[in-house]
Amino acid sequence: MRLLIVEDERSLAASLAKGLTAEGFGVDVVHDGAEALHQAAQQAYDLILLDIMLPGMNGYRVCAALRAAGDDTPILMLTAKDGVYDEAEGLDTGADDYLTKPFAYVVLLARVRALLRRRSHGGSPVIAIGALTVEPGRRRVTRDGTEIPLTAREFAVLEHLVLNAGEVVTKADIIEHVWDFAYSGDPNIVEVYVSALRRKLGAATIRTVRGAGYVMEAG
Image: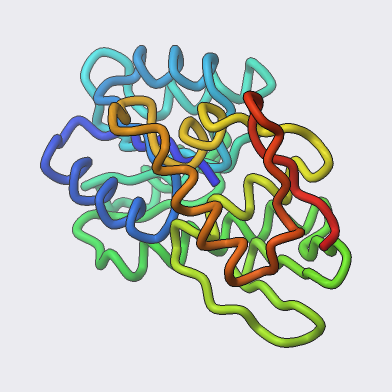
């Protein structure tokens, strides 16, 4: 899943991005409201972490603009303010949840996962492909009822393949959704994770389409 962090405190933004990336999320970071609107128009996100006190265009206006444009991406507002009227204004403009700074990272992570679970309930919270079952909300994978432990990044790669089961997914597409727009490393890193998934899930589950990418199949 892919998240957008909109936070002008660069040290906080970097810390959040590091933690969420370690959890297996693809994370992009921008530092002002106008940039946030531009990025949200260019890329589909599963959730936006939106600071209220931003330079130029504040978080309230960003949230209102996204909702007016028909963007229903879950929004978790972050702010140093703690008044009930500030919280009410944030929710009234279309935010889904509200977290006051300073906050514990584990609390933020729990809020993020809760919002993602809530959104997944609009569709199927469990995806079955042959003997393989993937539960994005719980970040759980089983095969014939037996749980298969995956690292956060392995799960993120698998999740993207599962959500596009039967279709060819390119390395570039996997990197775009699982890493971030600033990733400049070796694209062959994808092969490392696909190989690890094949060892754990069964070689027949992910087929290589030479010169094109990978296809998730019922193994």
